Image (tube, rainbow, N blue to C red):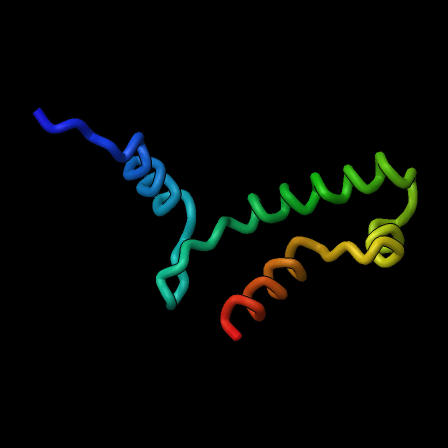
Length: 80
């Protein structure tokens, strides 16, 4: 009897493929709501740390990229 050694990776991949979308390159993209939820978490974390100031202020002060900017920068580094 052969054991399944993927430890659920195939089923996790299938779930990701059905919950996300694929772009023209075949890469999985996440739904806009998931990205928005992550951005909200970052916004709230900065608010807890820096107090009730506009979101962009601590980002500029500490040189913190938004999640969209971070993904863009990673893509540029990865594909260049």
